[in-house]
Image (cartoon, one colour):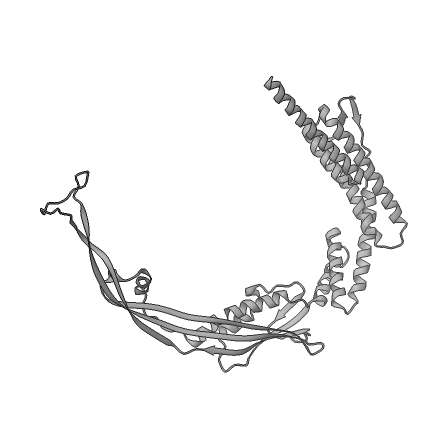
Length: 395
């Protein structure tokens, strides 16, 4: 009885699931979401092909396909009457969709309604000539529109022209002089920025730091429409100047601090045996002598030394529009680097020293970094902040 019940439940759940899938596809058809209905139907047919349970999905596939084709062809017919040349994008895309949809269905053919023992026929068309005709009109429209935009003095128009030419090239590689026009569009649409470093401090900026700051490829200042130059090229007009001004560099003198710390600790130094009143060794229940730890106090004098030096760098990145002479934006930048080295020596019993001081005993005095090295290390954060400014620049 239980077996019958379990089987009945399983069949009931299967039917609910199947109906749910059919209803979901039916809803997609009613919404006009034909391609989703087609995809869902094909998925089911591939699993159930040749079985009666595939019949509802075959019928829904046929219905969704016919309605989709009818809708798209009607749309193309309506668009064909529109004088606006922008229509060719939609017409071309629609023909491609019609062709792709057919190719998606072909692998599962032939299809039958098993219960009716009837083949389901799909009406396919050869869209090749219509695709080529729409493509010809579409690329011609893109080319003409791009050429018009290329004559503009506005960089955003020129960049739009590049995007149109790029789209055209992906559709019809090698079309006319598109490749050359794309190069021209990129050249004319690019914003050129001259980047320089100014030192307004009384300190020397390390040569290595300057080279790294102006080596844009080393830290990823990469923008398709912005070119950064650290040397002006003859005859090149620079739209912007980015001046990284070092405003202040503070370097502390070499400092060494020291202090003495007395360390004391009670530690075990062996053991003795517990004895009774008669001087006999007392044993535990297992017959082992009972041991008593012998504690002693140990003492050590730790001499701590701290080597300390710090550098602070303050700068400002200023962006100037060379066409107007106006300061567009400015960004304050600052960073700090601290050299802090601690080492220690001791006298007395090392066992009294806590662990944190033991680590310092492993260290030794080291040379203080030079002021040049301190400035270089301190400016690493400046470099990363400057990189962020260049990468986010929107010219």
